[in-house]
Structures are given as structure tokens and as C-alpha cells.
Length: 462
Ligand code: PMP
Picture 1: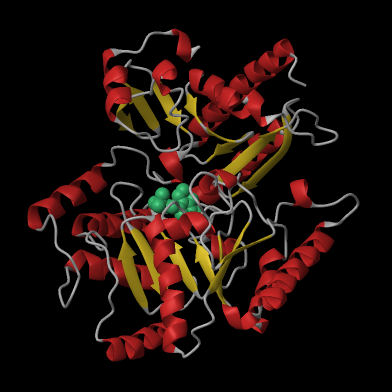
Picture 2 (picture 1 turned 45 degrees about the vertical axis):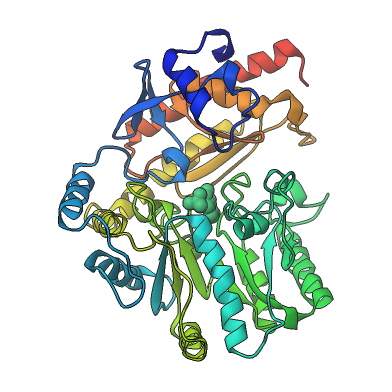
């Protein structure tokens, strides 16, 4: 057990100096952090010399793996030329413009302008402010509420965390703020009722959205935000026809759809955008993470011409468009965004993802036979295996038993980093992974699960 070995000197320095995000900080003094030192391809190595396959691309972001020489060269060249400049006022920089042009080219819906942020949370916060700004511009000051979904993940700033539909992001933080509404989560396995078909489940979900809108008043609702595939909520892939049904309801009430493509953008689902894979027709899009393949922080909001025009008209009245982040459009990040997209294109990363998808699907589906696994879910190269106490009844383990976290710890001991989201083990490997490496990753995944099963049986946790 990690907790039984004394902390190394560096682990002690770590626990004495860092407030770690998303960490049971009350336990950190005993478990210590795994300190990463370097990365190469799909592997990362800790300070103890142990290597791991980074089966989560870090935080669903390092799609090109680690140490890509072309990315390093692009960063170096940009650092030498112009390490920082902003795009406030009437200033600009070449990388920001070049990246905005590239995004317009590859966007799944017509896009007129790109607004840069430093993160996905800031992108989603910006989406909300833009929806408010737009409706003020259009003389609809009451049309301001934003619909999100239970189990959604949209980030951690005050508004993004409010949009997020996970109790941990609300409890203890005085959230959500008002003007945020949460509708049903499209997870058929968990929320479909006895005997209900997928199609009926979709119809019920759409009806529930319609009821919410009618109850609140369509004139009070500006937008709905949705991830094409829910990531941090447990890798939830909506059933067929879901977005078509949802969008019909939104269109009826003049509510715009914002796609949060922070995880699903740039090839992850086998298309450039998750919206294309899931047949979603958003009005605006948030992107981040694989936008720079995580070589530097960057987020983006992409808006169409008609919406943009409303900002122009409004800012003419107000005197300025008073929104922007110091590092939004940072030249280093934008140069890396341009290079990442160029690499995705010239190395045909999308084609590679598609080639790997059958193997990914086959290996995940095989896991569904494992005694611990209730459901496996996947879309492109992102997936999850939900661990259950009883496969027949779908009964979950008591969260206090910590079965998911223990399974991911055992998988890690076998040299693969995956992430426990409650009792769902998520997998989201770098898109450059080879077939042999993907098989190796799943072998380690399976070994860890076998050990977790032995532990569950030994401890009598069922
Ligand atoms: N949206 C989605 C769908 C995400 O997965 C995340 C991060 N996991 C965010 C937004 C927030 O991004 P960031 O952590 O860069 O603020």
C-alpha cells in the first residue's frame, strides 16, 4: 500500500507546500503524491524511476503524448520571437490570428470569431457572459438562465462549477449560483427505468427538458450547455437520437445550444468534433485541452456571425467589449495550438484514431464480462468501465468502500494511469498510441481489475 511507505523528502516538500486540486487533502500526508519527472510518447516516469502508460492523456488533454519534438521547436521559436503579448485593445499577435483562422476552418458549424481564454472553465464562464451580453443587446434582459445537466462537468470557476452537475463541485462551495438549471442526465444504464427502451428514455428526457423550460418560462432561458460525451461525470455517451430530441425542444423556445467540446474536440471521438459524432448542431462551442495537446494552457470560445454582430452593436452603445483574460490568446499557447492542429492534420491523427477504434471497442467490450464491471461505455478513444457490486441488479458499491479509487490504484501499480470517477474507471489514451501499446494498456487495466476483484472478495464488500 502506498500509505505504508514513508514519504520521500520530495513528497514531504510537496505536502508542505502545495494545495492539491481534486485530492482528498486530509489523506495526503499519509499517501503522498506520485511526483512525475519526465514524459516520453505515451509514458510518464516518476521520481522513483517507475514508468506508467498515461492512459488518461493526463486530464484528457495530452493527445500527442509527451516530448513531441515539433511542439518543442514551435514553442522555442515562439518564445524567442515574442514570449508574451496580449490582444486587448487594438493589439494583436500573429499566432492568435493564425489559430483563430484554423479554428474557423475546422469548426463543425459556421463560426465567425474566436475568443481566447486560458482554460476550459474560463471558456464556459465566457459562454455564459456572452449569452447574457447577447440577450441584453437584443433587448431581452430577462432571458438569462442557463440549462445544464446532472453529471455535467464544465469547470470550476464560480459559474462553470455552477453549470457542473456534480455534488462535489457544489457541496461546501455555496453553489450553484442562481440562474442555473439542471436537467436530466442522458445515462440510460443508470436512469432508464425497468422495461423502458432507449428511444422511450430519450423521449422522456426531452419531455423533462420541455417541462423544465415551460415551468421556468422560455423567456427566462438563454442557453443550454452540453458536452457531446460527458467526461468527468463518468464518460456518459448519450443514446441515439438524444441531441436531435433535445435540440428540437431548444429550437422551439429560441434557446441556444453551447457545445462544451473541451474533451471531445480535436479527434477524440473519431471526428474533429464530438458534435459531429453525436449529431449535435451547436450555435457556439467551447474548446481547450487538446487544442494545444496540453503543451500550454489555452481555451477558446467560437461564435457565429449573427451572435457576434449583437456584441458589436451592444459594445458600440456601451463603449467597449469589457471582457478578456491577460493570457487569453497568449502567443506561446496559440503557436502551440497552430502546431498541434497542423500535426493532427499532417500525421492524420484522426485517421489513426479511427484505425484504433475497433480495438479500443473490442477490448472495452471484453471488460464487460469481468465480474466487477456492470457497463462499459465508449466513443472514439474515450471510454469507461463502471464497477458494480451486482451485475444483474446494477447495484453500486457503497461509495465509502472506495472500490473505484482502489481499482485505479491497483491499475497504477501495474504501470497504467487511469482515473476513477466514483466507481467508473475512465480511459482516454493519447491519440498517438499504437495498437501494441493500446493492448498493453488494456492488459494492465485487466490485471488491476483482477486484483481489485480479489480485494473486493477478500474484504467481503458485496
Ligand atoms: N469542460 C469540460 C468538458 C471538461 O472536461 C473540463 C476539464 N476537465 C472543463 C470544462 C474545464 O476545463 P479547465 O480545467 O481547463 O478549466
